[in-house]
Length: 268
Figure 1 (cartoon, rainbow, N blue to C red):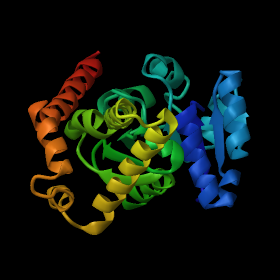
Figure 2: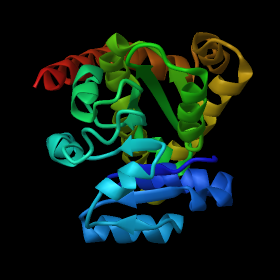
Figure 3: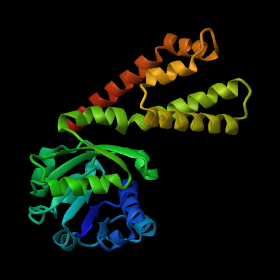
């Protein structure tokens, strides 16, 4: 990275992204700066990334930045961006603020080079997945910057803003569904006599391994599932119970419910 990037908000996701960037290329520390009035967040960001964090006046930081990454809580968005307006006309603005629509971000920043991103929490361990959408045309250089920043903590896909509520319901909220499944697997093991710590470790490793197999085999999940199922066997009995409980339908409905809630919050 050749130009300065300013993080407005230095919370966990901002720290993960900046940390991923500096881990990939230690020289990026020279190009990253953050602003956050919260001393605890500022201190944690600085300790994790080695990058400077300021809390007094954001305006000089905006002036000196080529890219602004907005990572504040939705309720603080207007307050956080009010000093930015009029100073960011020529800046690339990347927002990871949940529910903040492109039209609002353009209005609040004064920039037309605005990108809205829906990341997810596995970014905290470098395994995130995100989808981003731009306000209008996105120059190749800007797209390259966005993918470089997001690529530091996982994989990024370009999409349309109208998809982002569904993305929120699937990959944004999805880690919670997967963690519920992990806990349910472990609970089943405990009910059958396994020690809690062993059951939890087995559940976690089973999900990690299955996800990696699905990602790297090139085979459809249904094909991989059928490779585990023997006629009349143990897995067949377990899958039949999941079917009786409408497991797949329940997960799909969770995605739909979260997506619709995302749309409701966006309207606010």
